[in-house]
Length: 339
Ligand code: PHE
Image (cartoon, rainbow, N blue to C red; front, side, top):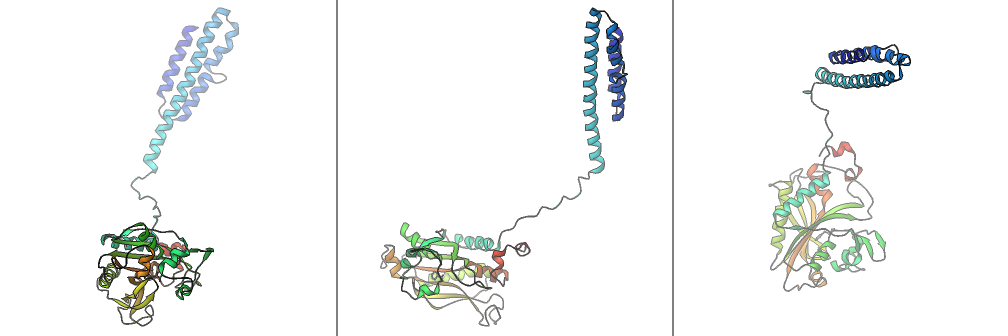
């Protein structure tokens, strides 16, 4: 009986090893040996007829064989599965086909132009600084030579957070913060978000961005201001761009100027964008007012400087041909994907 069982074990092993492809063969072998009428099962069934000693030995052996066949069958099954997967890959998957395109994110046009602005000024050795958007009236107005009763306060419709605390209406307060903390010479730009309670239309938004510039040193003159403006706008809009400075007023600069560039679209001939003037007013600028220097403890007899600043949206609108400021904030993908 023992010998018979050993033979059974060997043939079962051989048969399992010979299976090449067909999963069904596995099932056939399982039935042949382990099924209800299988060869191993049969032996286990006649155990009752054996003497107790024989039952012990044969029972143990038969169970061992049963487990071994079970194990070999499941190993073989795994092997066949791997083989099938491999063949499937070969047949159905063409790895030379192009993949599904991934949608690539893009920079927002305001981020893009700001990056460009930063690069231009970095090359001119300016540091880039930032200041808070929630500001005190002192930094946003008083220190900038704009006392409470000053008519210029009406020009900047201000959001008040509480008494003495505002959402900054301009990036100019960063000038004060930088000068308070540093000694000249200084050469900075300060980009950032600003707020004014203006009605929304194609060219006004209650939230917008400005970039501020400040240079302080010994014998800094209006000529330096003009040449920095020329270099900046030419790098941004093209080397053939003419710039013009016209008299203006800001409480914190004296003299003050409006910086215009020759209309980028009509090249000065006159069009709807420049309102037929041939010029686009882009930046406010001027020589730092002595009162501002006094507010930060600089001696106006020792130091001179200039400041400039203006809206980033307007620069982007001109550069990219955008006609409505609201497009920047609506996050319409059809718009954003163009940049
Ligand atoms: N802050 C001014 C504005 O918002 C612009 C400006 C900046 C003017 C710096 C002069 C100097 O209109």
